[in-house]
Length: 351
Image (cartoon, rainbow, N blue to C red; front, side, top):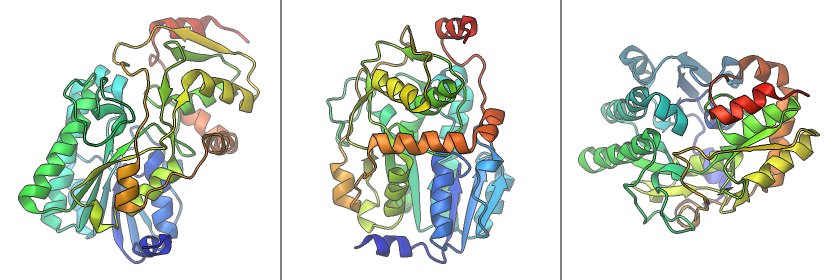
């Protein structure tokens, strides 16, 4: 199959994207809308997203509501979606430690409800967004491959992401619901609003553009497999199309490592930030000194090929911040999100 084949597949289809106002979701919605889907329905409670981030396309329907709300679930499934991309979640590790019950409700019960409604509505494909950064645990050999499974998980978020995969397996085996499990790795790119519980890249860019030092928890030698949002969206589109993906789990990653200290230096350089870097104690749940994923299974099953060099993706993200700065600055949600040591350093630092 060619790229054109799997993209044309979405033309004239009704598609539901939970969490469609978020970083990955908004980019996926835009892609589906531009591929001329009949209707792209977003279900999002805007708890970690903003209305202005939703693509303004005529075939996009936004429904503000929770995946736990039976009324809103009935409303969106009444539209008859053929494909469901389930991206909604309480994100991520520190948030789940601070709010474990909410994490269980949203990521556990919420995922169960999406699968139940999908099964009852006769949905033809559910693509579940899992987290490769989470479910492999801290002792898995690198590069991370899908054959490895760990029960040594360090946060409620990691537990509930694994729970979502297990529920997906149940609905596929018991009801025959076609489910695909995609495992994301350190996604970044335009569309992610910085905030207390968000990823390192948008927060670093936000602070750098304010001329603040960038706080690193740990030595900075830790690595992550940063994956550009455009590559993840391409992987999701493929996951919703290829029959070989059904019943499978696979990584959507870049297959490359980047040191956190190198990331901070690159962002300071691209933004012209002279404030440098701050170091503080590593967070207790952050037990992985390195992250690197294999993408061989995704390549074999769906032809996935991450094509965006990290430097290019980072430039695109910084450009988006500059373009949307007023909106981003008015939406970013911080406060007691960082470690106490970093909060003290930032609060006492002056330009």
